[in-house]
Length: 474
Image 1 (cartoon, rainbow, N blue to C red):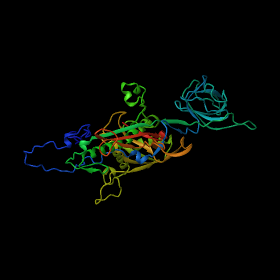
Image 2 (spheres, rainbow, N blue to C red):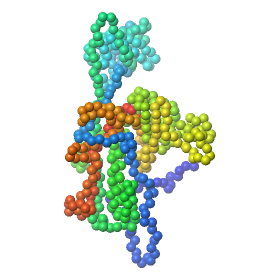
Image 3 (cartoon, rainbow, N blue to C red):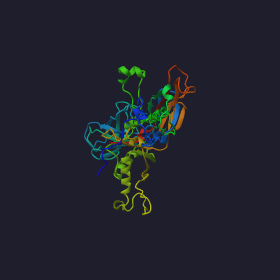
Image 4 (cartoon, rainbow, N blue to C red):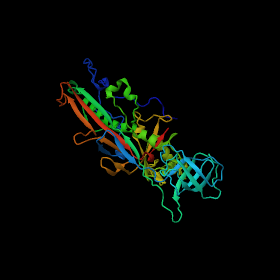
C-alpha cells in the first residue's frame, strides 16, 4: 500500500489581488427563513505556515554601510601542487626539472633548499628529493624547479610524466652555508557579496476598512478579530518576513542580460542579484549528489572530505523528512537487535513507554546533530521538488564562529559562519522598514482613499568558510 495521490494537499494560494468570494457572505436571500449554523472561528488547518527559522538558529544580523561587502579568508599554510610535469628523459635519473601546471598559480612558492616528496598516483610511485635550483628567486620563471633525488634509484618514472603531486615537508642545508633565499608572503582569498532590496506592500481602500466580516480570523503572530483586512495585512507581513530568509537562501548573481531586458527600467536597471547560501555552497563548498547518505560508509566519505577542509568539530544537518528517516534507519541498524524490532531508538524500551524511533544526532569522528528543516518539507516552497541536481535534501552547517578581517572595524573579529549584513547608518536603518501611506487607517500622507502598508529591507548573507559546508542534492 502507498499514500494515494487523490485527494492530495492543496497548493492553490489563498492570497489574491482582489477580494475572494470565499471571504465574505454573498448570499443575501432574505426569502430564505433558515439561518445556517456557522463556525465563526477560522480553522487553522495548516498550522504554522511560516518557514523562516533557519538563519535565526545559525546566524546573526549586523549592520553594513556599503553597497559591497568584502572579507578575507585564510589560504592553506603548507605548499602542495598536484599537476606537475617531469621534463623529458629516461627514468632513474638522479635529478630532473619539473614544471608546475596547477590552475590559478601565478608564482610558485618553492625555494632552493626545501625537501619535497613527489608522488605519481597513477603509477603508485613516490620519491623524495631536495630542491637545488629555482630559475628565478621569486619562483615565477615558467613555474619550473630542479629537484635532486635522495634515493639511489633516482626518478622512478620516465620523463614527460604529468600530474605529479609535490608537497614540501622541510629543508636541509650544509654546514657554513647561507640561509634560505627568498621568503613567502601570506596570501588571503577575498570574497564579496552585494545586498539586494526586498519589498512588499499591502493596500486596502478606506471603504473596505469600514466593512466588518463574519469570520473571526487569526494569524501566526497572534492577531485576531473580524476585520478581514487586518488578516491580509498580517499575512503580508509574515510572507515578507519569510522572504527575508528565503531570498538569502536562494539568491543568485544576475547575468548581464538581466539589466538589458526591456523591463529592466522597472527595477532601476541595476538588479545585480546576490550570492545566496545554496549558490555559494554549490560553487565553493562540498556537494553530495545522488540523494542522501544512508550508510556509515557514505558518512565516512563525508567525514574524509571534512578532514581535508576546516575540520570543524560540531556540525548541524538541516534536512528534509526523508533524509531524517534515512539517518534514523542507519543509526538503528547499528543496534544488533534493531532488525528484530525489539530495541530501536532508545535502547531500554519497555511495553509501557512510547517507542522512540528517532535520533537527534551521532558522533563519528565529528559530532553531527540533525534537525528537520521546514523549508525543505513545505510543499509551497522546496518540499516535493525532486530531480537530479534540482532537489535539495539537506545542508550541513558548521557550528560556531570564525575569525575574519572586518573592514568596518579595521581588525579581526569573530563572525558566525553564516550571518546577514543589512544596510544601516546613523540616519537610515534598512534592516526591516515598514511605513503607512494614504489617507485611511490613520495615515495622512496623500489624497489616496486607501491605506498602503509598505515593507522594505536591504540585505545580503555572508557565507564564511564555505569549504566547511555540505549541500545534499538529488
